[in-house]
Length: 253
Image (cartoon, rainbow, N blue to C red; front, side, top):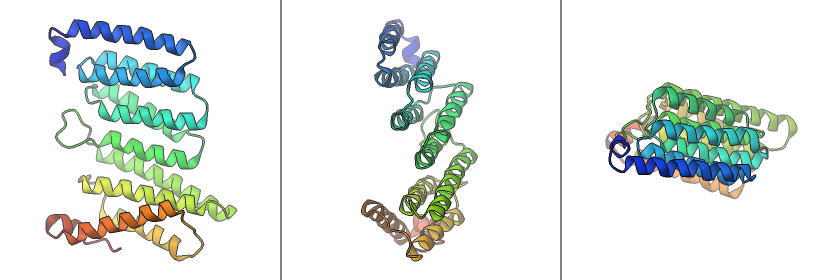
């Protein structure tokens, strides 16, 4: 990436990015906030791939300013934030300081979404910002921060579960959050993240099993299918044998 910025195409690409900046700013001024935010993020990813880190950071800053100042509808916030987090996950050229600043903002936005289920899912999605694919240069590998994100999500899911028990409504939605988080934990477990252990997975499986055995929770068909697929995946991994199967020996489904 740095070779592109320093090579013969560097000046032309920089001019293109400057033009994009002006064009997107005009869209933002014309009250096209959603479109402008997405385009800023697309431009940020392009600048990152070209090794132009300061420009990529500026595009992210602009996108986040639009998020903060212009997007007030809760559904629009949820959608926009998923794009912000997904784009940031794919960018690997930031300095540690710049990346930490952007990740801190993204996780903060996630925790402040209006609805608890949206908070839970968004905070869990931020865990991927701390654990990139192995072998990708610049990818983050911070197991402790992964654990912090997932624990925050679990806390929100537990609060939703308690609220459902108090009000008598929403138990199925709360259970769906735990199933979603189980799959997040399984992903990081399979990726070798050391902060995700069989003990944590057993605890989550037990919470879900206890809720189901109470007979008081009615799962929507799509959530039930998702959970069944998750259990099948665990059984399949256990049956593999060898090192992969041994990792799952401590899980009973």
